[in-house]
Image (tube, rainbow, N blue to C red; front, side, top):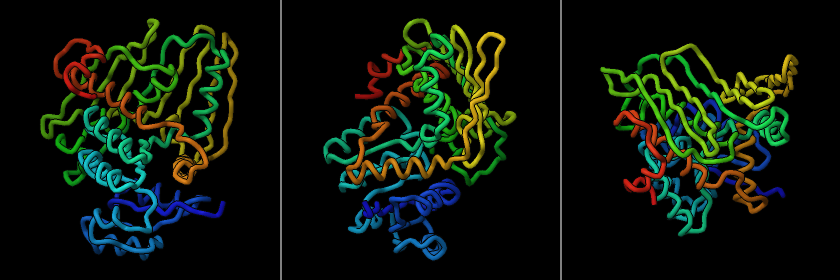
Length: 340
């Protein structure tokens, strides 16, 4: 039980610096083995600062390092598929940041590489590992608010322009839908425990960059159930998940951004309101520990890569609806070759 997963990290991304590296350092089953960056001096600086065993001159060297057990890929979105597939083909399990790739076809290729090598692949949706999500799902499954009829999820914030940040580049998978809309679609699928059958979406496109600054989607689920999903780089901060049932509602005000915060689930039934309080939790550490346990063979993945494929199909349908106008059936993603 003392064995630890030795992590190799591709790139010195902000999310790695602020969240994932501290999560591994605080974990019960992880260690920092190797780091590489486009700027080798930055990788060496991180090695000294955080205690990586070594800094490599390239991502390929991290993957090839025999002392690396698993890869964390927080590179820009357009590099997720390429470098995850390289790692998977080298026999290295991959925890890839969200969104898993640019479209369902790329995710399907990643899954094929993982299956061919018999190695693990998971999308890094840390919010799913916060105890508030487990509690919310338990409340839903117990019938606490009756049959769920709709979900409202919003992840919005004001994002200052930065030409050096990939989120402002359409070619690199920038825009609000990729960056934060992926959370809102994921949460709706998680609550319903099903895949949407269609998506109708609209977006405000930034004329200077071409990215979607604000996007809103209406997802239809089997049984006449619906999810309203909002994402924005130009709106007041929201990190909301509202689950509406026939007999009550559940509300999470920090559904996607609860790291190191005391949180509460608001349960409303009729005229009665209850607060279900939960203490601080490091959802990045919990995610890293779970993936590490799976790599060590101690437990199966809670969210296999097929879940990422389902989310990407929904995102693809939203982009297609934005492009063409009408609602798009998710099945059209298959017919157009978006996944296999």
